Length: 343
Image (cartoon, rainbow, N blue to C red):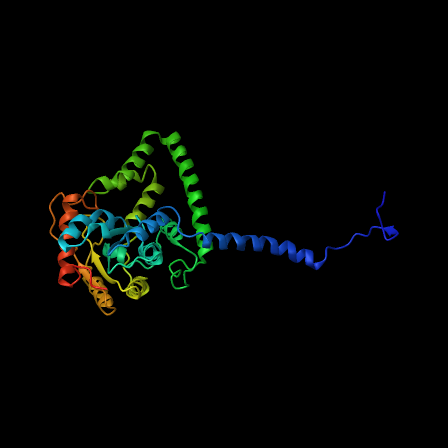
């Protein structure tokens, strides 16, 4: 039975322009809201936890970097040599992450919570220090986890993306990677059995030995896993001009909070696939760049260490971390930075 309106049959009409606009705008607005929410979410996980710890400690000295900063610098030995209180020293490290992530960690975990250290030690290999962008997906995820939502375009330059968009991309990609890895692992084990398990075991155990596993033998079993592993090993081999990195911004950030930056180049195990070749020119350029900005460069790549100084190609054992910390302390003393200045 026809429906009547105004005394006549209902006419089929085209939806008004406003309806079309609303249908188009709703998903756009929804995406914008979610993206803005992600950008304002603030640091998560370890970043948020350490920010609380740093605010409580109000450290006098911060050791900044990736896992090298954690494993290679013995804070107790450093404090004792410098005559400082070890309780007022803290390591702010984002493991397996590039320099842009370190910058954000210093900005948001340290200075943003009100801490005012007088010295910021940036510790890493030359390749890690001279890193302009985020070379791997886990770097992007780590970068996203440090965001608080008020970063400038310059601070986001390493990824060239809106903070919220980056956060969503990183979280989505992380989930996809986890699922893909799970199903690839199941498929490899079903079709290749023990060989595939051996590949995974050798790659996972690489950092427990002084040399990489025999990659040539592995390529015939799981070439994709080996390719990922090789990319990880070589991700810091491309050294860029310091001007292209956030290192200058890091020095400026510290100076704005009355902190002095000292960049320390750490040694690596003999034969390790890091910092290889003639790096003198790059190191000299880095020194000039830092000193022109009131920061300091300490090159300890050639430091003489005991035979058991490294527990893997990149990270030191206790036997190496103590003399390394002592060498850092001696360098700081030479720069007049051994004790807290009067404020």
